[in-house]
View: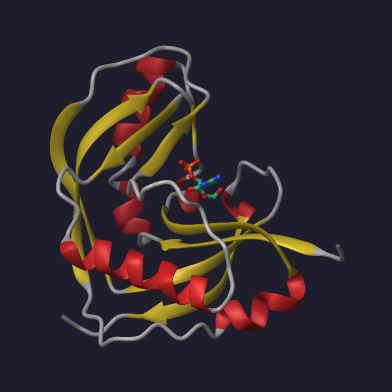
Length: 177
Ligand code: 2AM
């Protein structure tokens, strides 16, 4: 195979929205001894494609996803840890239908265009810490609300832990709700 890129589609918070996640990363770090993500790297993955040949990036940038999609608000109101992989996360306890619909339509559009994506069920979450060694109970938190007005195609460049790790390749706006 020639040159490849590691890519995924996801939701990216504004800097102000990302800043509201930091206290939660601090709690998760203290409880699990996990490593916090850089604030500029925080996101929610919609569809993870993994390594693809760089030749297909134009097709992914110009992906057509059917439907007139309004923006929506996403309330991240649960905090916890996955013991099996040491990830500390925030999740919506009830994902908005618009999020689930966007994710499934995007996945279907990719499949129709010949791209295989992750087959595991969609579990929307924002990873705040990695490599945690200790567990902590899940719990409700005061919601951190993202005003979702676009989704993005992102390339992941190596293992840098600073904000430069992720490069936005394309933006897909949602309609003003
Ligand atoms: P994570 O935060 O739960 O690790 C970039 O790597 C993004 O894609 C991360 O948000 C990561 O999820 C997600 N990701 C990485 N590998 C994945 C995989 N095999 N399946 C689904 N998502 C993955």
